[in-house]
Image 1 (tube, one colour):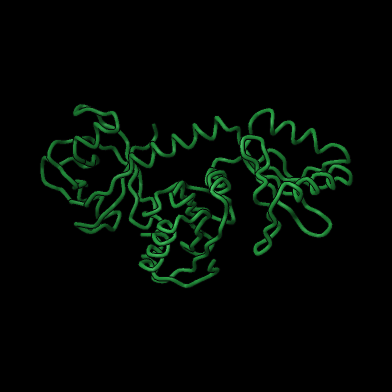
Image 2: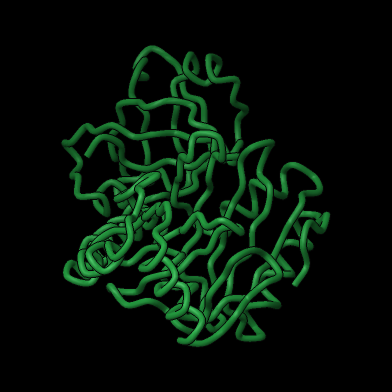
Length: 292
């Protein structure tokens, strides 16, 4: 699959759409800004997860694929990569935003590997184990505590298949030892985190900025349509906090808000705040409830 191809935002979207139409399994990676990349995981043609990652800090933020592609498109042309995986592997790695480090630079001594693997199996962990070996590194992915035997990956361009390869690796580590890094999470917690992430994404809406002023206009409260507020669990008497981002995903701030009837797709913002943020009338922003 293509590596490091320079694409426009439109071409990137077309590539992802075509891969999905062809029943692709794997992931597409593309650059958002220096040091920040987006990942869109696809299993059998379905987009299962997307997130952005700041490489230096390892910060991960789950997002809708369309949002990430819009962000990339605003930068003109971007570098993009695509990698083929099995559907099962794509599903597991699509949850990697929720993995946490269980072992870092852990020296697995001779005959100790079984203890590490038993711990992963007992708690139904999904994630990956990276072994630092004398001739390089090897990565094995676990799905609910079970090694995925259909893919063994040592580096890009070298994919070996079959149970025998992983068995030989485990036998070697069991007899010789190795340094291991494990990033994983219990399956039931991954399910919970995935459900919460989907719920949070469903709460994100795109609205059009409408500056408001005058004697009776609020100086510190933003207004959006009451139906959106009700969808978030608020009524007409509620005030609540919302986050406001621009269409490139940059956080503009958090503000007090309330739901008001017949605002449709407008987000009414006091003129002073509009000026402070450097927004323009009719500019689109993304908003979602904050601090729940």
